[in-house]
Image (cartoon, one colour):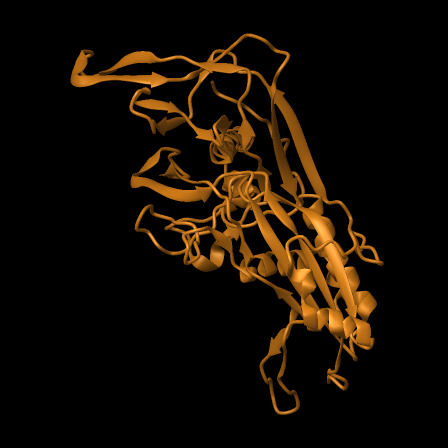
Length: 395
């Protein structure tokens, strides 16, 4: 493929607000305040690198629209091919799609504790406790895309790709960052503005040079493109279930206030939650137990679980690690009240109390009203279901 006309004949700008419906975890590689810290700008505010969002969008498009792959789609995303043999030439074309960094002025950051679980014994690993920073749900980031159209590109193809990306974000079908299979990074695109500049017209050139569209209060764009997105077959199987707490439940977290108990149930954005990590771990453990009961001989059960839930860890070679297909959502626990309980630690050998081991906790108790139930959503994506998946909640 050779570019014969590199003249820029148009630009398309997309502006909007990317609102997160669940916590966001984007690691920076630093560990001064926590084992994993979120990325922050020079002012200490979290931000999303454009490369992170662009990578998620490109992976989504190339995974679901292989039949739409063409010269224009390669130019849209950019390509780099090394020379192979004597007759082939290497190719490198800069991406026509520019995703700017996403910033926000209002964000709440908190630290959440977690523990590594041994997949075989299903108990906590020795020295496996760690913590990580996350951005609380409800935060809105300013989104800005720029699409460059050259004379040898198809504007219709470019805009259909762009419409496909806008559509999946508006419907909340993509998650960003780490732990996305455990409910993190769920987002939705809102307040979309599309500004199209035909640079063959003098009036549009002047509008582009004035850059008035960069002002926060600019309202000269349209809400959608003239072309629609590519069609995609829905290959997602989902389960929505409603649960009521039978007696009590506690997702243990350290108290953040001095007057509270030694341990309380986990909260996010001042709401009691059942984290996706806990729910997913419970489902995985029970699914493995069911499969081993049905097929006690051989490694078929573990292979199926690794295929569904993923496979990673310190004992797994990097080339054998895989991302799971099962996703669960973090859910708010409603219709409950917290009550303090004073407890003691018992020595399992003597049956007596351990000295200085008096502590209190604050579990959540059901109010006994079944009118308001917790909706737990789990989805299994792009793979066949080998055995029925059963959801269990252990209170």
